[in-house]
Image 1 (cartoon, one colour):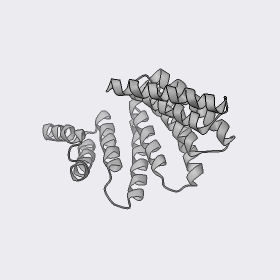
Image 2 (cartoon, helix red, strand yellow):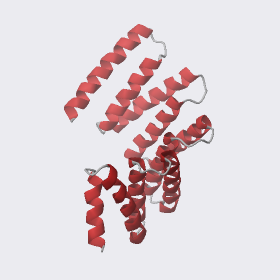
Image 3 (cartoon, rainbow, N blue to C red):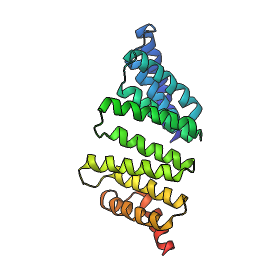
Image 4 (tube, rainbow, N blue to C red):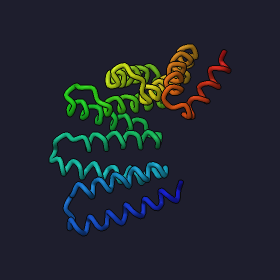
Length: 212
């Protein structure tokens, strides 16, 4: 609840002040990580402008720390900025940050499958869905699903279920109710097996029962 977020904000601001005194202004990893925690906290509080300000500070610091090299911290921050701008409905800006994150993650992993790449593909797909670019969104959902399935080696996972759920939302938004029902049905099967209290279960069941 909001009290917990306010408590967390106070804690992170105090920690930030202490770290800055200790480091005497040097760009330290601890300062960057605390700024990142603050940004995440503001994001959860739906204070998106404030979160964006902190994420941009974090990005600048991680770039200084890595001295121009790619890093997982930079890629994660780029992805968080994309998500943040998507929440603010600044979809073009979000797309730009997501694509930067995707490119950097691919460089770091050298083409290997990774959860970070799959997550960014799913986020890009969601962003294109919000932009009503449904065909483009579908391509990215399918890429994300392919990655998650390779990572899980054929086993079920909540990441697969969540991506299928988003994919179904995309078909529904595009007016393709038959495909939406099929994909949501696949998501439902996984949710029931792995997370029987997931709120998406009731939503999907209600939709499927009303559409038949």
